Image 1 (cartoon, rainbow, N blue to C red):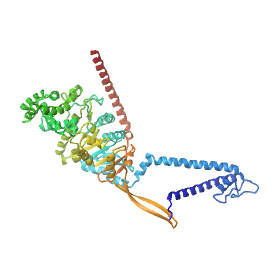
Image 2 (cartoon, one colour):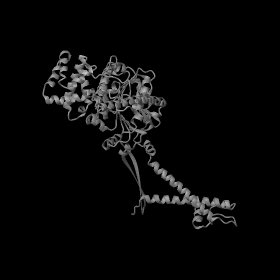
Image 3 (tube, rainbow, N blue to C red):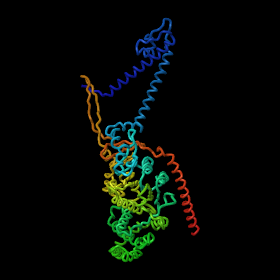
Image 4 (cartoon, rainbow, N blue to C red):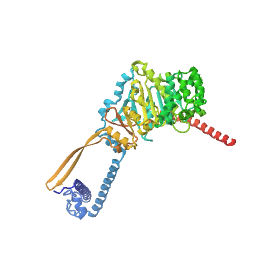
Length: 601
């Protein structure tokens, strides 16, 4: 037995095909030329008559009129030109095809038809606009004529249909930097939401594109203690507000510490707990005494000065809290130093006048949480969790306070659900602060009307901000996972590959021997999408892993492709002009301060 590779068979077939094509082409050229030269002649005897003439110069394969001689030289030149043009066109076509096979267009086309990913019927049944409208009867019973966006997030389209994820579902959006998370998803989500909204970011990109449009439907508030946004009418929120209640004070102390470097540290959690206890008592003392943020900043700067808080708590505070604080301040000096390190670090931003001003509201400037939750209002939380003047802990405390208020309101509402759902679009939250309540909100917030979207550059960000187990909880609690291309964590990509499952492909092999040929057909299980294919996804597509459904390949629309894109773009330009004026003023003020300092020296 002498087996031969099937590639030799293919080569032979291709060669035979090329000979037939060349024969037909040269025969056609020769026949047309002879017919034009000799009227009534030029009929070929076979398809290879042209090759016979082109190679050997023998025109006997064509019928000729007596006395007429076939122009062999001209025919050969024309044959050569025709063959050159034909095979040149074939070569160009093959090059185009090979390049197309390597292009994003072919990659996306091949994925769309692949077994293992959702087909049009599945999309229509489980994630269509009609499905979202059916859910609206349960999720938004007060609406008479709801739109699909009232009960679902539009995450993209698939097979020509808009794809919606229920607002009950928690969503994780994961995409590498510059993968289009903001342009293709976050800004659209902010613009489409018709209820109260809290969104976070370390930059002002999302704010610039959405602020004026959100202001058309409700009140827009920006909490930007570090003055990163260039918005003049920023919100002032006191970290002390509401801390007359010891439970609120305790929760706020934990939230502020959790948003600091000490709170994120995995090796100093015992000190973080002690520091949060001390901070809770300082917050409570500042609230019951009416001294506010200024007193809190002063007490946090030095434990000796904080003895004032002990006296306040002894007279006006919760029983036992003054003794707890006094025991730490007047106790072991090493314990005090370690404890106050966390307290001082958490309150250090208050030593910056601009930040303290942002946290010292004037009369009538208090943030009305109940009014905020009652309409399609927007709160932008902007800041950084590291570096000079980082306010991550305070931003986390604001978010925690609003969500806790929303939870209590939901429990007091019909069906234990907010009548007007609250959206949390938490972009860059892992770079801002570690919010301890996030895993819990991801798990059960949808049931009370709190819809959460967490945007990450990588799952490892969540592991850094929280812990490995909490990051796993966040990932698992997200019943909708929107994945964009560009990821590079191989272990995580392998998990996604496993999550998508496998498909069967048929491999057919041929072998030849002296007794004939045989065909082998083998069914093989392969991943629906490999690690490299998940990584390679271009910006225009995303992958949705939704509940227990098969993966959905999404077409992602940028906000500039919206029906109202012109209006949104105009608002964005106006906002950016206002921001540039404010930033220019800040820049000139900084130069003036430097100049004054130089003259003083």
